[in-house]
Length: 275
Ligand code: SIN
Image 1 (cartoon, rainbow, N blue to C red):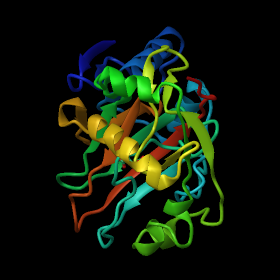
Image 2 (image 1 turned 30 degrees about the vertical axis):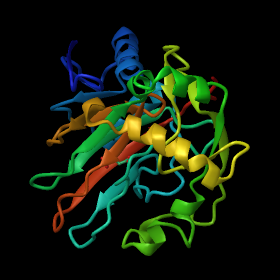
Image 3 (image 1 turned 180 degrees about the horizontal axis):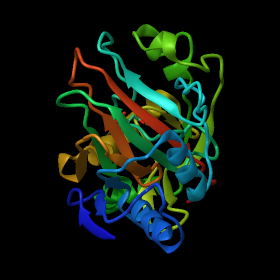
């Protein structure tokens, strides 16, 4: 297995691995890379849907997303797609998947199936680097805080996607979600301190209204969005990205109007988070 940095502060590119058959010590080594660096990019992979599911099961299990359309034949696989005639994409803002669940999904295995001729990259930020970049006063201020997360404003019938041309494709509009997590978590496997709030799903600091919470949340988001901390996955046929939702935020760029993009995502089971 050969490993190179994807970007100075986030991600790795891994070669010498066949995801269709990876197991044992190689799989454990790949997990450690994903937990630590946040995202691993693997090129020239030939994963069938069955291989994709089997890899997720070997990794530790599948947490089926409640909102995205599922593949008819393989309901473990969610379709993150945009047709050529659609304007809105899925995930086109900085976010952490499933932070609205009390036991959030660990991460995702995303496989490129249809790509536009250019654009459609996915950006990542390492939330350990974001935390480390905060000044000591801010770190002390957030040390013992918790925040409330929900997806209801995004996926409900009055929510963000319902106002767009993605609305009719999504499932789960009637679901109610809500979870409370520490603002700073320790990664359950690496022990690294990570900033765990995100602009999509975090509503308020526990004990404060949304309005009272926003100045601090916006300050944390501004620090995390530092372009120096970002890394970019440029997709090609055969590219697979595996990311850790605790370690990263991600953002799917919507810069390919008039072309289709279809990605197959399996969301991986996670564990409860603690400070
Ligand atoms: C997502 O899971 O948020 C979408 C990522 C992507 O399509 O690049």
